[in-house]
Image (tube, rainbow, N blue to C red):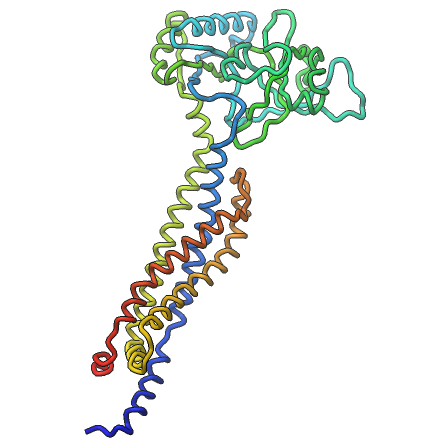
Amino acid sequence: MVSGSLVPGSLVQVSRTQVSGRSPVHLLLVGVQVALAVTLLVGAGLLVRSFRELGRVAPGFDPAHVLTFHISTTWGETADMKGLRQRTERILDFLRSVPGVEAAATAIWLPGVPTQYQTELKLAEGRAETEPKIIAEIRPVSPGYFATMRIPLIAGEQCREEIDSTSVVVNRSLANTYLGGSAAIGHRLQQLSRPDLPAGEIRGIVGDARELGIDRQPVPTVYWCYSAAEPGAFFLVRTRGEPMTMAGTLRRKIHEIEPRRSVFDISPLEERISDAFAENRLRTFLLAFFAMTAVSLACIGLYGTLSYLVNVRRREIGLRLALGALRGQIATHFLAQGLGVSFLGCVVGFGLAAAFARLLSGMLYGVSPSDATTLASVVLIVLGVGVIASLLPAIRAARLEPMPVLRDE
């Protein structure tokens, strides 16, 4: 028979040997996993929020139901610009007569697709030297461009092309920034980089459109009325139905009047604008994938570490239960460990994310690198994962029966 005086000493010895079985190194490694997961989650969350904000932007034009394509042309044809313009106008008139087509136009560059051609202009009438230089985007377009893209006319008249003179249309930003608003109509603008071109008379003012990209604010822009479809110029056709359903019909119709030319690179304008952000979308997808992978690994690591701690501390847990500890206290202890590691990982992760977000700032639109909504969402996700990963080991520890554990050990 064992003397009763030996029991307290045995319990003390058991307690001493098992409390020292904790593994802070394992918890530290899990904390590093959590911190990396937080960093990736913040980056992915910021990019996702940026795309959501970008989707709410009003571009100033309507890209829906617009089909874009090229028609083969050689640079040799530009020697006869008058003939090239007449040929282009004939094609546009023919396109407008096709059933299902609302409007048609040409443009050297597509609206909403990042392309930049900025130059300095001067007023043909002269301007005070104290006035700022006129720096604007130049967009050569045919007269039907604004109707095709549904860019609203604010004052004056829309673009029209004349044989003996050149007319231009400016956007609201240029008129307000340099020419006193509606007083801009009637002035003549000359490109300093192209002194060979005649000065263009401002005939109208249109609304601001995000010509340089959906993610960029409108800038002062001059639309040069120019319908000659040089090599690389785009034809834009607004259709009543889905644009691609008209592709075959338009190809055949153009072949009827221009049998020696080919129609190629047919694509809806919305698709071209979307493709302009394909690289950012890929980055977002990859970052989100890596973030979810890191969160999953952190969850598995936390679960495995706590399960290991429960196993190596079975005698300690059994002893505490035998001495009167409540099962809820045991469960809370392990839950607190899991949440503590998750919280510290969040703190370190936010520090890493602050540096990482600066690298992403150039890809963000409408979202601050320190966006509170994104950071709060990441905290909730990480702490939620921490609770899920800690819950099962905590419940297992709380359900241990003290006597079998102490007897087996």
